[in-house]
Length: 76
Image (cartoon, rainbow, N blue to C red; front, side, top):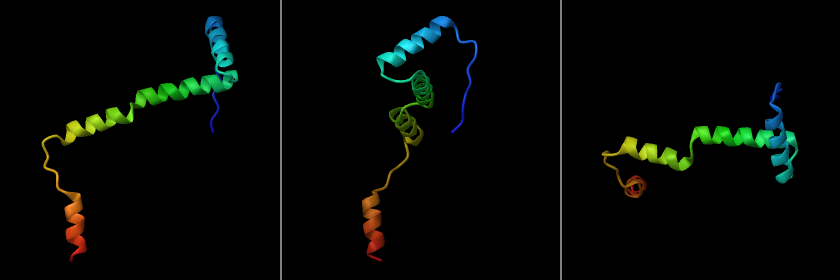
């Protein structure tokens, strides 16, 4: 796992992070890591948003009955 060193953090931000960590019963390092992970997940989008994008991309295409295709293939 990679490490990140952060310098010149404003005092008010540092104190707010410490308070958040204490409220969530985490170390300061764990709290910062949690917040970074959350931000990355938000940027990637939710699975529901991805599904919605795929539905739009596939809109108008005809869909086949996969169950019928599998049964047909098994009967060969």
